[in-house]
Image (tube, rainbow, N blue to C red):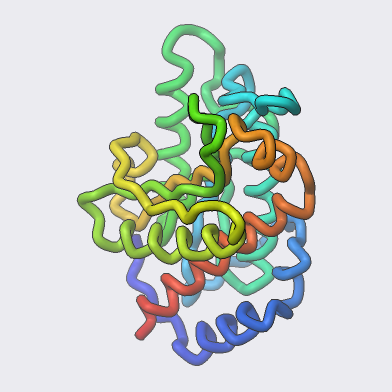
Length: 235
């Protein structure tokens, strides 16, 4: 992870626009664009759309939609929001295919190792892995953020994003950011979180997560939490 020289005034300006919900291309949930020139003075965010290819993840309880498809859609909106605000942004998976190469035995570990490789090559300052949750209790709702308990910065990032996700689902019981023992949290020294955007085992969450408007809203909540984290780091 590179040392950042972020202009505090620039971060404050971004926050002001985010709070007002009027940052061009961000509040609107722009789809990711190709960025040809990186800004060395701005953070690099790696967005990891979980699963892909033959690894579909969990499935919507009523919709039957694969988690992998929802992950990718939210990740694309999220990248558009970061790049629209001037951040450098890299996606580990930009299409429907997985990163494992062949579907032979061990494909899951090859997939995760490729994601790690992309994170390292990107010199990431932050890693956000997008997923959807599933629980035997159908009443469980809302987003949950996981962090590496050995990373203080990872926990701070998780708390910032969790606050925004809870505000997004005001009618649901607030969730807490949780410790996680997952490969994607431990494969990098950069602040890293896994964002479980909702429960596909809950009919309401399943319905919402299959709408473009809610996918954009979830992405924007994650983005606002990340900006709040960077603002704290820039002080």
